[in-house]
Image (cartoon, rainbow, N blue to C red; front, side, top):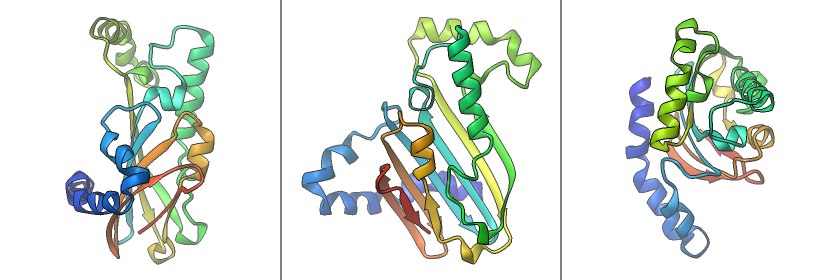
Length: 198
């Protein structure tokens, strides 16, 4: 399954280019400007194969937390904990239909800002990560990976990310790319147009 997710950015380039051609005036600049780290923009890849659904979300930390620096204040640490708690319970964020019977098998969250939580060895390197971010001026990203097993995958017609936009209002656009039983597609999602079908 992982190879499907890795192939998505390449497989869907013709799809995205085709969509851009049909929305040249309204969306050409948006599609052209979508980069690996653009504030307000996140990327989501999903692949449904048999009963297995895999979802990967990549986002600048500022979209989810409101900041990108190391969490030093109590308020910043609370925001990190709140965001992590929501990302660790993703069922609502992706709008998975109850009829599909999808159970979360695996959830992995990766970000320099999450270091030190749940792994004792990470705490030892927390200040080292902060120092590297400060010196290099690097941007902090959040990478979340989820794997579901769905007992009735035919009932899973797509994803609805309205709750994700509501939970993280700093996220303005999500470039979603999916592979499912009906092929592949890419779509630029917003809070008022947050659905994509498999």
